Image (cartoon, rainbow, N blue to C red; front, side, top):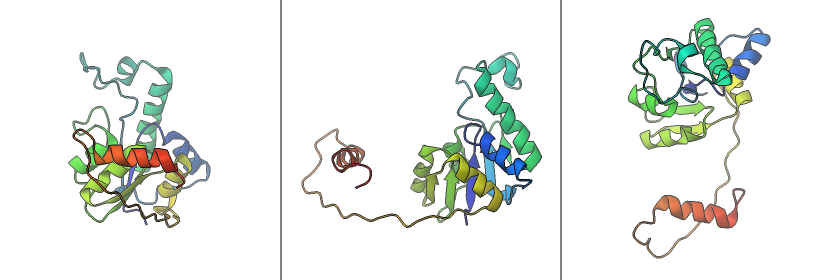
Length: 178
């Protein structure tokens, strides 16, 4: 069971299309939160552009994804922080800001940065579009147990080198498959 599901405009349009084509509904809209964040320009919103995607999002493909998200959240009843909402922001940031993520919750999102929510005591990870569709439909996801690896590191880090630098070096040496 996925306690929380975060949705944005890039990884969700195909997922919703599959859901609607199968004549399914969103299983737990109350456990899902949507926001527009990937295709929203960072330039200041002026002259009412806050409310008009056509004037604000110039790239046609980006605007189409944004408009699809707006339509899909209305149809599904998923809580949504759109351009008109002061809470709108980066999906894996607003989840913490708005108290949607709590310690001990399991959270997924079609975004590779989702794992940063582990800082709040959540088990959080990114998923692909087909998995986004599955979670929308069932609020579940079948997972395989991750492999474990024991690594011993001796010595100390030199100034300016962080634990992230260390793990990226280790991954570079042994590869992502271990």
